[in-house]
Image 1 (cartoon, rainbow, N blue to C red):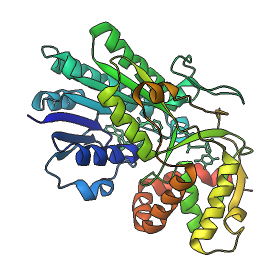
Image 2 (cartoon, protein in one colour):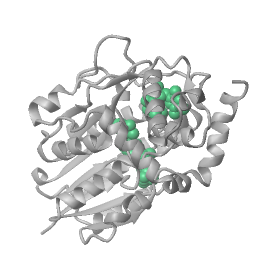
Image 3 (cartoon, helix red, strand yellow):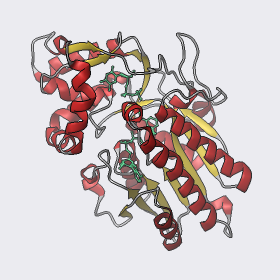
Length: 356
Ligand code: NAD
Ligand code: TYD
């Protein structure tokens, strides 16, 4: 019998990389990808594997209780890897309720469905994996790192919704014995990332000679991990992580935003054959993000020590591969940027860029 695995949010950025990895690496599993296809979900991300015999796509909303319960009744899932979420901090500031609905209520719907479906089975063969973010830990000063025991201190509506869903996952483990595992990862970058997050937004703006909106002074720090390395960590944790445990995932790769942006601009000039300094001239300092967390930095030593995971590429290699992918896939960018996103972008950045 095939192992039945449900991946939620598999048409999004990280989810599509994870679906591809699981479908290819585990031909003995059947992968069901459940995704609502919001602005951030795109089946073009999975064209290369969509006709594989061990893959099925289901369009649906994790907030729809009846639909989710039926899905679990009709399929005998052994494992769930839950990534479906609203994921962009700026959108959470503009519309927090979407984040509560999908990230909190949607997660609890999935937990309830798994609990019901697994109530009479062998729980040792089941696993509910919640993919979360380091942003739940709050904001660091220049010193220190987030570990798995750092207290939660979420400060944006996005991180508050993810923190809440993490708490529910742990509560279902402690209260009902649901077999769960969680991971909290730093900022991801790579191919197929929606061009509203820093790196793909700036690549895409440079290609269109549009301003590069740097929030505040550009001194905020993020810790970047190549998406493929995040997915290899999820694979290891899903298969070898201990029941009820949390693992931090990160690549020891901190960058001040403005320093990262300068490297990105230089690489873009080189790769597009423009004169040095051309892209950097687009840098435009704009009004800061409300409540902008200063620094995130992950201590991933538990994952490295206990499960032997480490990242496979340096930042320079990962960034170079990422830029190459965006240069070769201008059509993907224009598809995902059309429609609803175009008006969102105007609203989001129009005011910020005025007068700069
Ligand atoms: P994304 O925004 O690219 O993709 C989210 C996917 O979820 C989309 O395909 C979307 O259609 C789907 N979705 C949204 N609402 C849904 C709903 N109600 N029902 C079903 N599907 C729905 O996000 P991402 O960057 O790939 O992040 C995936 C997960 O990883 C999220 O849970 C996020 O919190 C977490 N995470 C992201 C990062 C990062 O840097 N991007 C870092 C750490 C953790
Ligand atoms: P982002 O990619 O939105 O990820 P997160 O907020 O989850 O860390 O932003 C990364 C950093 O880049 C963050 O400090 C905010 C900053 N930023 C800008 O300066 N300009 C932008 O246009 C965006 C989208 C982000």
